[in-house]
Length: 252
Image (cartoon, rainbow, N blue to C red; front, top):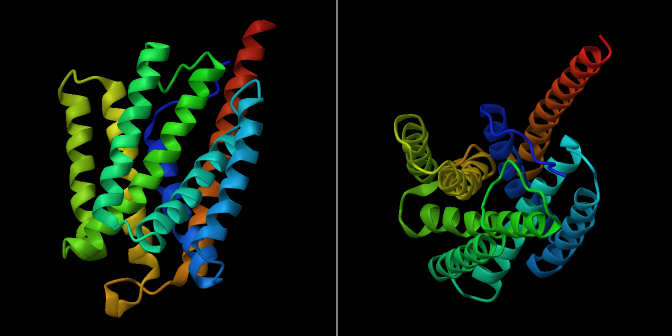
């Protein structure tokens, strides 16, 4: 039943691309197309639940479906965070704190219920649901945290991206140089790659006067989609190649 990809360098590159694309695509729908945060959240959450059902009822790993769910959690998380922080007036700091508490609560219940927080070998439907719920809330948290770092701390988009990038480098060093739990490091990195994607997305889309590269939400989304599609296609080819090797060995 395990349908999760291996945690490799390629996985993290695709994760950052997907979360950055989610940031730019969410902003494209809610702001550029002027749909609004509430309606955008409803649309993107509907897409998330639809594609999640496809993932839950598959029997093996399908990279396209898996990364579509990741992308859906990212786009939905962007508009959910913006709706909570801006429309409801909660603010970036309080919004981030609320989402941190919710995420810790989800992971704690998952640990108590399933006795594991493994992200490479989930064998139950309940475990899958916990996994995707944690991912949805981590990506929502990432948007709020990225906006907080960019707007409330004075770091700006580039400063926020550099700060989070530095923390991610420390996580990588911790992974290779210590025996710290790989599961803990994964979830910390997963949460932080979302605000990294959020701040990187802002860096791509915002005007030069605001410290961005002024590529716009549409242009940035297109570029990121092409990169992500290429990486997903590469992973599909690798899976097919490995499958052919297995079949060849079986029939020898």
